[in-house]
Amino acid sequence: TGMTFHVEHRLTEMGLALPPDWTPRGQFLPFRNDGTTVYLSGQICEWDGSVTHMGPVEDTPEGIETARKAAQICALNLLYRLREACDGDLDLVDVMLRLGGFVNCASGFGQSPAVINGATELFVALFGDSGWHARTAVGVSGLPGNAMVEVDAIVRLKR
Image 1 (spheres, rainbow, N blue to C red):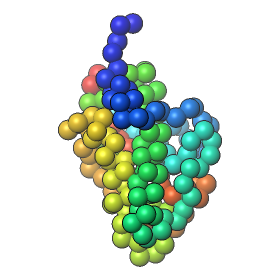
Image 2: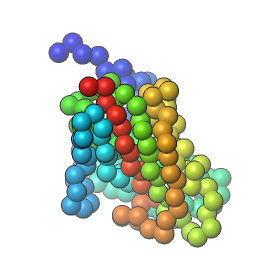
Image 3: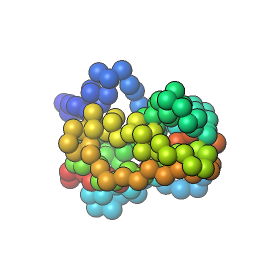
Image 4: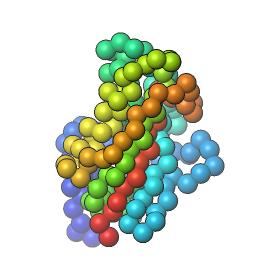
């Protein structure tokens, strides 16, 4: 088709790849389009059908760094579904509007924002200023598959 895929090229330059397809763990759509707005269902840190990082997050610098990597995997899963919503072209993304982050942690854990930065930083690296978004970062007592992190998103497309 002659199309260039700048976002996916940047992803490759970062040494990252989108995951293989997988079956959702519940009965829901992976995304829903409403005009130019895409609502992406929450994605856990899962790769090829297996949870990559189990919770809860340890409240240590190493634990937080591990959880940031888990959040990045969630973001890669979101990008996979977003690419489907964009008919295969992530360059159609206009702006990341909102991210919701959920961190599997013990009561009193105060580092949820630092964990979810793992997803935010990937979107900013890929989309520049358009990757910035409104966001929540919430600590929870459990996630599907005992995953360490789950992230959902709302995105506006250019079309």
